Image (cartoon, rainbow, N blue to C red; front, side, top):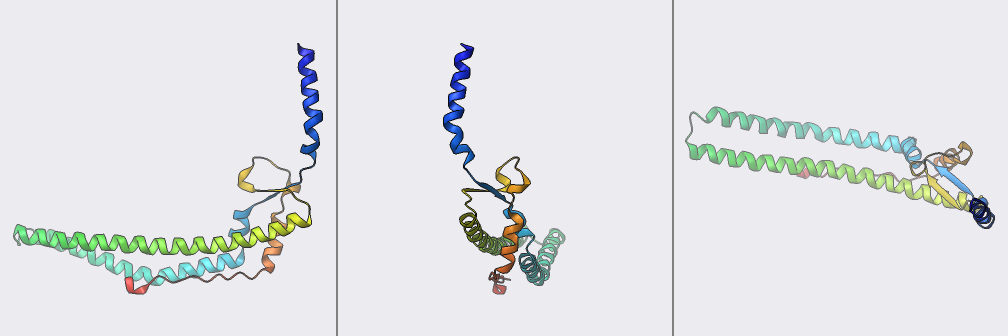
Length: 180
């Protein structure tokens, strides 16, 4: 019985080992390619600078809401219940609008960053396709999709050198100031 298992395993390796040896594989760290790129870093700094000019306006709106809430608390002893309820309803409406504005603001920049990363990914994929064709690579894995690989398989630096030669349009749309 043991002899039969050894024969079966041997036959398996003989017939299937030919395909296993012929596959050329490479590994690339896409996150590193994007995050370490100077153009990407620069556009992220520009986005952060752009956001900061709106943050002061948002902070002022937040302070006005806090003052409004404090006024409601102080007016509880002076105003009628109906007047307090009206002020509370108005405050809740303003607070809800403010939360929607903050969500719009955050989502706007999240989408802009996502679009920029998508542009980088498209360029990286083009470079990887060219590299794979020129070097007879059959499979390229992202660094996050495997456990262990030889450093000789990692082509991140090669692709990074090519990526530095590519001019990528990294414009972003500012937040609509009219919403503030």
